[in-house]
Length: 282
Image (cartoon, rainbow, N blue to C red; front, top):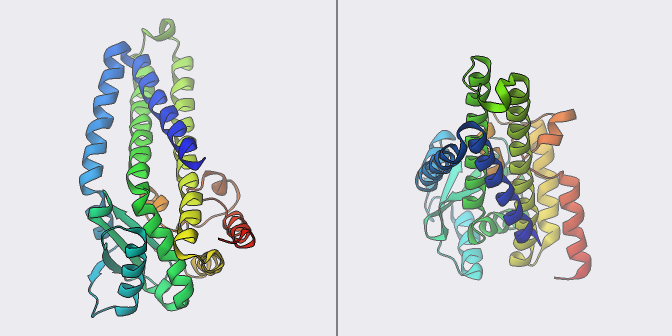
């Protein structure tokens, strides 16, 4: 069900991109939009892991440097039948973790010093099972595609609005500037909402797959509660909104309307689903 929903959301994103491109320049505009997003996806596919690891000053660690972390990941990778990913530690007291890499053969898992400090081995195993689920389900690639398409729509929408303001879109609707501005804003917001829906869907899927991989959904549920409280107590310094969807809990803090535009489902909902799995007996 989560997979079907993800595909449907990506189709909607692509349709929004092509539709906006068509409004700007007809078939040529749609083709150009597809070329732009294709190039952006290619660049993201090959280099996003290096960029994000460097952004958070992650340091690669070996088995001798972090034996407990290494052995947990090695065991889970063997169970999931994927290659052993590279391991990184981020020098941050905010408890969090993420996986990155273009495919299971080029994957990396990064944990903050904070998460290694506050979680016990069972809870850490639950978190790492979640992250490896992102790897073998290729969620990293899916998230990158969704973010790239949404970013392209936002960029094109911005150009569209400037063109309308300065008369560049006079052919659209008889030069109706207000209509042009309204459409570009609505499409950009819709793209963002769909991208966030993709991210939340994949988080739910990774929770479920990770719980099945470890056989211990309550451990992940307990870890999520600790991570949420820990992130509130020690917020991450200057997290990038563009990478927020990668972390196991949202590093961006805030309440009110910001929660409506979160890359992650509410932690309480995730915990409730995991505890249902416990009741059902994995």
